[in-house]
Length: 439
Ligand code: GDP
Ligand code: MG
Image (cartoon, rainbow, N blue to C red; front, side, top):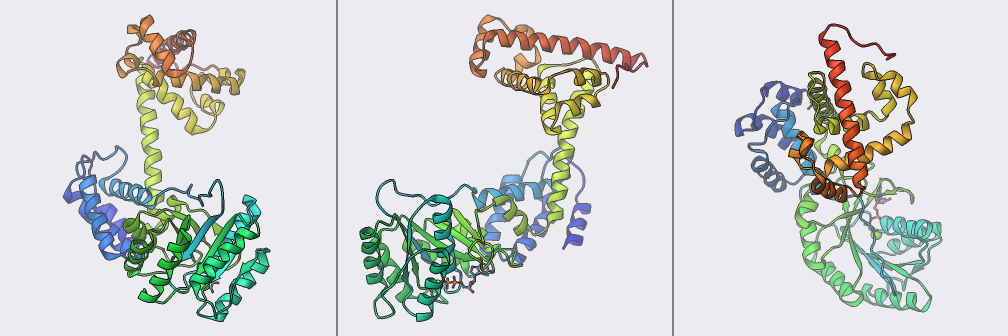
């Protein structure tokens, strides 16, 4: 696949805007890649046509070729589709919070219920009860009991004689009587959607009104997950997804399909059979995985870095030619931030080494933040020509940046000094004499 992608990159050259023509090859590759990751066929189709519309006419960033630009847009779009990572169980302020696990058989409901209960106990100071509503197979109840034992969480069960709905109701009553603040209902699954099961789940929902209904989605799942997720969501209005078995080889494209269809957030990720193998969801990582090639993202990241560098170089060039606007100063601050350390950056600029070694870095960085805020509060016109700044404008800017007018003036003084220095440096450079002040 990598070879194919590289070929696609080679075929797509030239800059300018993204057109149907210069996007096509790469979009074909992206399409193949998503299908290989088991993203549903229809989801891929919609996704690609959305990307086409969105990307068409987009200016290709300076250091990217159209192919790379397309991949960047695709990646960003997948991340956006996958949602955020800060999703968690929403606990009730008063009363018992109820969580219902649903999903096809073998997707990891029971395991996830125990893993989540474990996090509740260990990290969230909660007192959860597990209720065994999978009453079809005795083994299912035993499995939950074993897991509950291993994490010290009580499991409520009435055995296989009692119907799931009744078990759920009595389990809730038991939790109320015994001071539990959270109840997790483990339900039965089937290999396929079936009427009887769906009715059972709908009845439990109607009786309990769960605060969360979590649908488990197996990372190894294939094309048909779309129908499954749709059925569950239509009937139950699912509130969160648990992506299980992500420790396997599967690229896990199914989750993209489910997200596209349901918009429901991914709240947890299962990373193994052990009780601690639970994590929050990282959309960036997942997007890399679904796109299927770390190397493609490396390319895009490199391009991004190159782009940042080009912006820096441009502003450095302007500086050296004696032009130095507040916008350039802002760009310099940003460069410094990206470099991580002010001292490190200063040492790279001719003549700055000595200054760098003399200054108090923490104080300077703080000052820099203020100056940045001030520049950001200016209009473009003001940044390019600060001589138009009178009292009323300065007042507005100070307010916007949350500083005193004095600080605005100080910043402008610093800017003027820097500008003078740049002029000297550039004059010396033009005269063929590079300043050597200890760098
Ligand atoms: P349920 O039928 O939906 O309740 O599924 P189970 O919780 O019983 O899990 C089915 C199988 O998948 C069991 O063998 C679990 O140990 C295994 N399993 C569950 N979650 C994960 C996971 O995140 N990673 C791996 N590798 N196996 C898992
Ligand atoms: Mg189970």
